[in-house]
Each structure stands twice: as C-alpha cells, then as structure tokens.
Length: 201
Length: 290
Image (cartoon, rainbow over all chains, first blue to last red):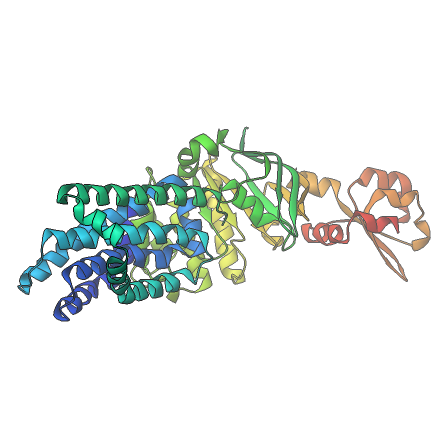
C-alpha cells in the first residue's frame, strides 16, 4: 500500500519541478496564505488523478497484487500525506519570503482541501475518463474565484447562521468544523469504495 | 495434473454480447492457446480470470483459490501481458520497475535486468518512444520478473513482425522447460499455436466450442473433399460445416471415423489446420442444415 502512495512521486517527478515555482507564484502574487496552502495541497493528489482516470492505469493496478480497497485507501491516505508535506513546503517558502501566516491559515487551507477532495474524488470514478480532470480543475478555479464572494454574501444575509457561528466559542467552532470535515472525508471514502468495487475495466 | 484456472458455469452478459455457461479449465504445466475470432469473448474471459470483470453468475477459481478472499495471493502468482500498453506512457522502464516491482513479494531485480538485456530494451527511454514489439517485450520482462506460476497473455503476438513472433514463441518454449509454469494466451494467429500449444481452447460467440489437447484436435478434426452427389440429409450429419462449389464440396468433420464409415474411399480426407477449424466454425453449425 505504501508503494501505491509512493507511486505518485515517481509518476510526477517532472511535475514536481514546477511545484516550487507554482507555490512561489502564489506567494509573490501575495495570495492569501490559506489559498496558497490549499493549492499546494491540491497539486500532487489531483495530478495523480490525471493518470488514474485512464482505463489502462486501472487495468494495471488491478492486475497487480492489490485489492480495490487498497487502491482507494492509497488515494485517500496519500492525499492526507501529500497535503501535510505540501503544507510543510509551502510554510517554508512563506517563511523564506518573510510572509506572515498563522495556524488558522493552515487549518483553513487544509480544511478546504479536504472538503474539495471529499466532493471530487468519487467523481473521478463515477464519470467517464477524459473529461473529469478538466471539469474538476475548472470548477476549482471558479470556486476559488467566486467562492469568497458567495461566503461574504451569505454571511451578510443569513444572519441566523452567522449569529449561531459567532456565538460559538473558538474551540467548539474548530472542533465542530474539524468533525464535519472528517465525516465528509470518511463518507466520500466509503462512497468511492462502493463505486470502485462495481467498476469494470 | 491439476487445473490452474477453473471457470465453472460462468455467465457474463453485455448489451450486445454474452458469455454463456462457460466451463473452462487450464491445466497446470502446459501451454493453452485460446483461439477465436475478434469479438468472440477472449478478452472478456481473460478479464474475468484477472478479476477485472466479475461474472454475473458462476465461479472463477485460480490455483484453487477464490478472488473474494484471496485476491492478493492469486495475483502474486500471475504474470500478465495485455494487448495494449497498460504501463505509464511517460515513464521509462526503470521507473515502471520502481512502481511495479515492490507490488510483488517475489520480485527479482536480477531477473528483470536479465530480461532487459536479453530483449535489448533501453532502461532510460520513455515507454511512448517504444515500438509495438518493444512494448510487448517490456510487458513480458515485467511479467516474468516475479517468478509467476501462471502467465496470462491477451493477444501477445498481434501486430508483431514474424521475426519477433518467432523469438517470442522460442522464449515461451524456453520458459516451459522447468515444467512448473503454465501459459494461457489468446491469439487469432493460429500458426503460433501449432508450434507451442499443448491445449487449444476455442471460443466462438461467447461459447466454448472445445478445449482439447492439440493431439486430440488433429486426431478428431479433418477436412473432407468429395463430389456433391455424396451429400444427403443423412451423410451431412458427419460434418460441422460444408462449403459447396460447383465442382464438389469441402467440409469440416469432427468425427473422422464416421466419415470413413459413411463415405469410405469416395472422399479425400486431409488434416485440418486450426485456421481451417476456426473458419469452418465461423460458418456455424446451422449452415449444414441447409
């Protein structure tokens, strides 16, 4: 299983060379640190899907002594491992450029990444190969572009929810959000497992 | 000798095609050639053997084990070669080895490099720069480097030039020398099989027509030529399929004795090649009722 996770790095040797400039671009453009953490986390797991959505890759992986459960587990665990590594790297880069960031930024970046992964990972196995990478990438850019505006709009207009949230103490809020996100991730994992088990190649 | 692969009453339905109640055994220690026209269901059968497809009903067992509980143990013991390249096009063989090798407990680097050298393959060039023959050799090198007991190949000789086909068949023959290996491969180039196959499994429209030793096939099947006046509703029963021409008929029989008893010396009996058998069956059983 560890081999399946390590595979991502072997596959993406060349893409990893643009990983650093990619992060630096966001840092130099003065993007919000949370956004930098988010895009850094997305880089490796989603690049892998560009390979994994191909039927040939699935035929190969399923012909090797791996179970389908392991293949999916390697995706979900791998995403977390690469997220941690990427955030570490991004932190170093931010630090080197003397940009300030807080633990909250990391938490927001990681949280958003996990939510995004929860919704998109199953799609890679549900839809036909060839389209889904493009769809996910475009929807990501769209969300990153208009997402904050939507949140601000909702925050201004749905006072019931914002009141409820602002009334929560910080620890409760963080724990609550963390639990919700982890639950989402777990549900997504189970869903993908079911979808992948039924898949034929 | 036991069976390495056992399909029992396997059915798999698709929209426009289905495999019906297939019983297929692959004997340990032999080369079984899996023949049939394009679209007969060869790849589907192989995919079910590899657990890439699950049958609608019936049982698929490899080494006596069930995929439901022993998937990893089964796949450890199989080497696979598919028609197309399933390895990452952008990677070189060294990197592919880094990905595939650790998946197997019994992976042997020395063996891998031995085959790379034997096949004269470059280690540092991306797979996409390989010719069809080189890709095939690369797949084979990977399939052979973990001491697999069963080698499953889907159309390994398709698209290869005759020289390399011969090379490949020689290599397969060499692999069989130690007696413990089993090779199961599909092909529609039947002359390959005359040289190395011990058993022939013949699939047509999703149905297994026969699975005999090559000896039995040559013993049982023959081409029969004779005058048209010899054919009537009774004598026609001796044939699988009959081709009529103005000068006479040519037919395939699977019962040489019956033909000899019925026609005696009035017909010419010739050895039927696998290609003849495939061709005549393509005409179908029903054709001889006409």
